[in-house]
Image (tube, rainbow, N blue to C red; front, side, top):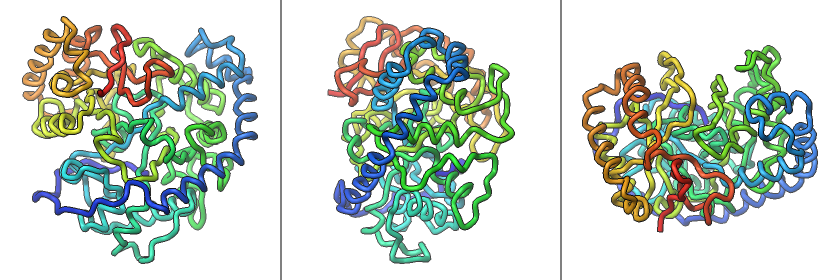
Length: 462
């Protein structure tokens, strides 16, 4: 949904207990079955359309620029690789550690996230009186009804929604096909990476951000903006196994009538968008991830989880923004949360300026992710990693950098950016702490969290 802004955490007292709902409700099951049926119906035409794009001459020209090793691969083989990569890709839910409760839609913050043992969705937060009503919740309600067929709340005003009804709503997620270091950073500095095996049968995919789609294209007040609304077909949700039609809709949705220039000087088009996705998805060595020269963070496919996900079993990794959190008290609290849930934790830099603030010069490429040595040494995923003779030196350097970064104020994002790029990253580039997202088939299970770049060793919880 729509990004939130950063503000000081407004909940000063620990949040109250809330009832633990069923992991999957009958309404969840019905909505997922609806999504599967839509996906099955749309799949044949979607697959044909995708294969046609994969054979398109313009697509091939862009692909040879970004990933020349795949430029001559037949369309059917490319499709097979992309299908597998889609199943392995990270699905993240990002939030701000200090949520601004006046903007929409209100989401988790540090206190409401760490207090409970399951992930509350945004409606549960309101129903439990952890958040107040804000008008933009209407957009979320419209999106869930129009895009996913969710039944409306009994309270049409949305001011006093039922906790039981809220517990049959969804958790928003973004598919990190571009392999960004902290996932959907436009939504927050904390990215929770779902366990793909745990959520697989509970995911319904929308071709684009459902909030953008609802505001831009769906009655009663579509504003059009620069989106190609004709790319969206109603009642055509996807799944992690039937996704091609959603991908085709995504690349055409962003095929704008007056497009900006891509990095190679060509106008943005469906073919160029698909070539960028292909190159990002199929690049197996994170160090070789191309510098695409443009920001594709808003162009994600939305993968929503229709369940009340358990933190320990449903999340495998936490991605954190160096700019806002490294070397801070909130960062330490998040490390402790990661240890408590036996997660892998990693750090990247969030170039997106939250709250509409001034953008920093984007110091590409977006392939700089570092394991948190403090957490790795205290979780089951670290058992093999910490036995490596190189780990002790890297862990010592990590703690030293924590102390040094604490002297650079998070409010000075420019200074933080310079420190990350010029000091922190060179310290861990090429070490056992350099991390990368999973790639298709790299590990025995999609429940593994990440790969070590230096040797492609799998980092997995026991």
